[in-house]
Length: 206
Image (cartoon, rainbow, N blue to C red; front, side, top):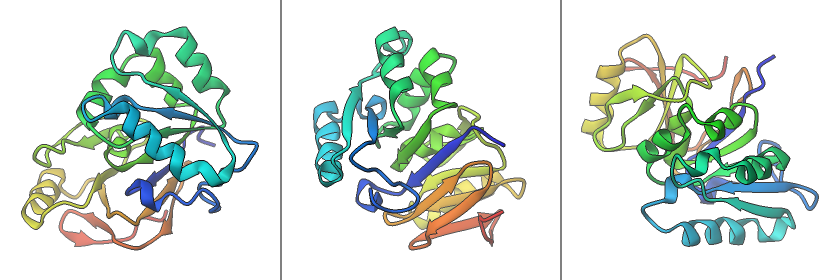
């Protein structure tokens, strides 16, 4: 059985703390990992997550993880290890990859329960999508065979599908979509989720 346990949400608004997929209760210790927000405001990104989870009563700790030096920080790794779930905030996917890849923090993500918001989820697969133009590139490799991205314009989506070809499934999450992977794929909220193999529509569950 895979140790990987990831819930992908298209946006913070689609994260329902009480759902079966993302249950977060008063005894849950949450680690908010802010790496992807390095260029758009870490405090604001963390505050948004705090406000969204306020009613759950969960204990919330923060790991900034903004650069590769901090990705080796023993204190941060301990906070992540003690958490029941880590929430990866949305933001700069390529920066998150550069910080997480081949670092202790990145390795720890592979054994943590994760909720990945927005573009941060794309980083976790063997192949990720470069948000700057939709081209595939190398991700962390926590799963294979499926590429996760977000909904983009028609032309950019078509370009990405063409570059990916038919060897992998491409799951584009809209703002409301929720998908879980724990060795098997499950779609928790189908709203505005588009799954294709090449240019053919298909299903994600398997």
